Image (cartoon, rainbow, N blue to C red; front, side, top):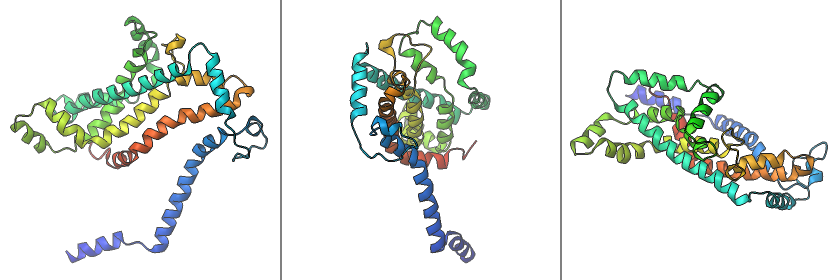
Length: 288
């Protein structure tokens, strides 16, 4: 016991100089990763002459709200109001994220807790499906969406996300860490599989589905020009903002404001869920 305690002390002990250099390195790395976000924030308040200045300046000298006022004027001149595009993006991102978390969790539950001999085969199929790029399935997916009559609907953007296998893999990796004895005790008390899943498993794997929320929300929020949406009233805010920011040098200021607006929701979701993300990253992949 004494040897074990001594070895633990030696492992956990660290000099003050080592601690200082570790924190200094992490601080520099964190500041370096924060630079793009700061640059987007600063550029959104630059006047047009500072945005186009050469050599470019990192910080703004004469901050202005003109970029945002120009963006509002541009959106008011379009056929579809800004509020409609914002609603489209929020509805697709929120509804799609909530639906995918439920579907991926329900699919992962039997993969983690069912003792059938074919479960391993199903799990390997899920893992192999992660390797497929979206470009590979684009043509057959368009045919399916078209045959179902979902062109120019919200479902054409939400349903393809439901088939993603990464969420199933992530949730399964967390669910296998839940002791089977806990589920057996709940079943002895009369709990059904649905009750075990919803009231026992889901609260215990909260870090996993919070992390999945970030990834799914980001992907759905950044949905731009889609091959399934042709009506202007159904286009997302990202698609509208991309058309505005790509209209030339004269709209460079509005484009900078667009970049800041599009960055706010994903960053907000990440800040709220960052503790769960760190816990998930440290535990995912413990069991295969």
